[in-house]
Image (cartoon, rainbow, N blue to C red):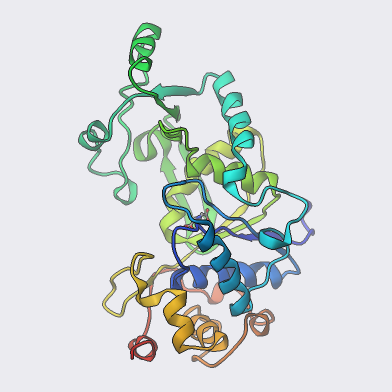
Length: 322
Ligand code: GLU
């Protein structure tokens, strides 16, 4: 893309449950970031994991986004010029990229069980995720043959002992040593499911996404993804990792809790009340007042958005009771 072409942003929900207040917060900021610069918004359904994804949730996500006034230009029922917009239909694309990496000698099979991986967990891994100790990196061809006859392996990407960093549009400079803080990472699981890290890069690159807006829980994935962009010879987008929403006591909300999902929110609030409350939390309004997403476009600026987690005020939560 050229410097002046309008941005392409995206909503990339996983249909493993109903959308949650935190997902809506993220979608609102992704929408405003794109729309405030005349850009387009793509909806991509990230249903890679067949055990966790359900088509009904994907439909519900589209319906909830539309109800909230978070409109998009491509993907979902709208279609568009970069199909497929649903990851479960992209396996041939991921396979082609995987073969390219394999051809460069960058992948190796990993036979480690969950228990072995757990035991090998490094204590200081970034954000508590495990750093793989590389035990399958050195397997001989003979060992691979014999192990393969018993189990299907996962596939890992070898990473260099090098720093990989970037400047996040919300969090500022961030870097990691790929070897010591990330470790060789999975690109395909042993059950054949492609890993999020690979799929998200392939899709953002082929869809021409220029602005990735997502939760800070994914900040530490970004150096791995940048390394993949580098290997694939693709330009990386700009990243904006937005703060996570917490309960008033600082506890993190999760999708498993139904207390803040769209079902509950829709029973107690109008769309402009939800959006207005989130806009106030994002620093875009002085105080909560009803507002629709399109009414916030003109006043949007990243420098208003706080960099650290945000507690949802008790009065908003009280509104959802009863
Ligand atoms: N599908 C991921 C989620 O719902 C988001 C991935 C991304 O934005 O890169 O958490």
